[in-house]
Length: 382
Image (cartoon, rainbow, N blue to C red):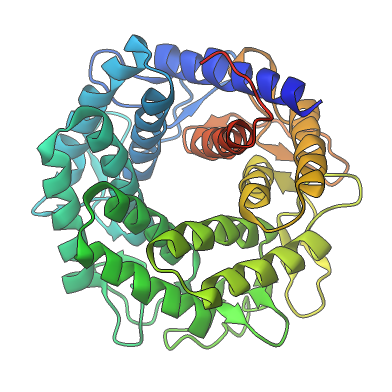
């Protein structure tokens, strides 16, 4: 049953989603990715084109080319990289977004987006060996340390810096992801040092020991935010589980794996809806759902977490089968489309296809495929 689910998931991802996005979602003349697509694969203009979206698409197609050498995907990489570097890197820093006519919209440098510069350029380099990617990664790293690092630890959300801004764990989680990719690509000890500091931050501030939850929103000095400090996202618990095990390969430490196991227990116990899927948000103090709707990305993070968490193989397979079945039944649609949102009754909401979501779908499915191949549970066509 798992093999059948993986075959259909692989076909959905590689033969439909990625193929259609490369055909319809990439501007063939200028090389950039559209911000959003309709369900009939036409451009859905939303008034901005973010650096984040471009980097997630560059990452996805770069990583996909490492798995399946598809000429059409290879052809998207350098034009997309060139578009990113020529349109978003101004005055030695990255800007946030462009207008639909490609003029500058928002000049802020965003920590969340910079995380995906590191991730995307790492994988782009692995495919192309384009040394420019390594140079931009170094510049990104230096900018973060010199301009966005906070005395209280971690990084500010954006530059120019507002020291009173709400602090979030989410950009730091993705910075950890980006720095792991950067280190794995270069073996540069500077990146390793930042990985270590981000892991320390997670143990010191993000993890709420009394409730065994990962918190989202904080004041400038890392106290829980008085209005939103109770909010917890099970999908981020699962995302951290996978990242902590990836980081542990670089910096082995039982503190990180023990944190991952505790986050898994909390999210698996309180974040999974009885009728399937993952709640968007729960209350960290009483574990009750706050937002019972279910975006597509939390279940893809759940899939990744299953592959690394130390549970029995039989339980892994059972969880993977059920999660993949739910995703195929409720999220994945014909022709590579997907439902971005379900309501609490698993009824899809009318919503276009964001250019940022294929990153989640891609990584969730490919991690499961890789795990199954490594455990001799999947024979695919690649």
